[in-house]
Image (cartoon, rainbow, N blue to C red; front, side, top):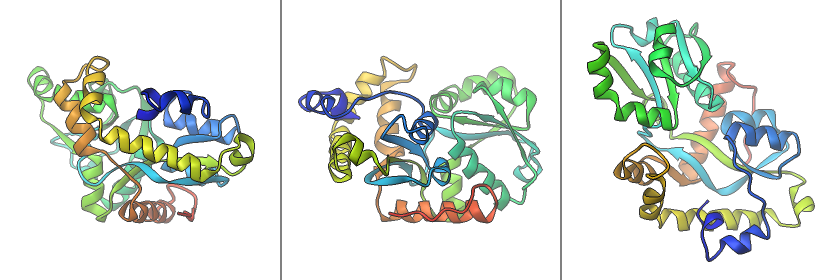
Length: 266
């Protein structure tokens, strides 16, 4: 979103777009309700919104360790023996990936319990916990302190890395999507919209230092942590490998009954 927040292009873009900030799951709901035209949409929402078209160029993905998606379990409880997982309710897509992985780990009976993102609270009520986004990054930063405080050994699984090890595919979390009638409603072609977002992505990737400096004042994370996360953990280009990863995800999600059958068009 660099160009939408920084000059010299923010003013011109503000004449073409009205930006509203919300969770990706809310973006999908707004598109489905026809109260938004373009949104950053979680992959798991696409089968339920067949009228959406994926904009080329941009994605939120990871090709190995992502650090902001964690499955945390007690060391004495093997993956195949886990029966309940306290799941951060912020991402349906991460839960869908996790359900597929538990199938591959030979544990299809695991029950996901929606819960607020508090690791201690979650592990009091379930065998394992899933943390997403800032709570996951903070949990990694606080890992040594927690181990000493709680005097119990935990295993922290990076979900994107585990997915890569199981399938050989990148972990694709979200894409920009546009409603089929948005071009008529807004007067902009999908090609122009894709160009605006791709250019903004490129300018943002060239401004990692500035982004890290901005966000270390907004988050309780060190600047170097934010910098490495933005530059090493997240992949922003919807390349052929990510497209193959999306196809593989939807195929496995349908085979395991995690999501309805969905044929992606790219």
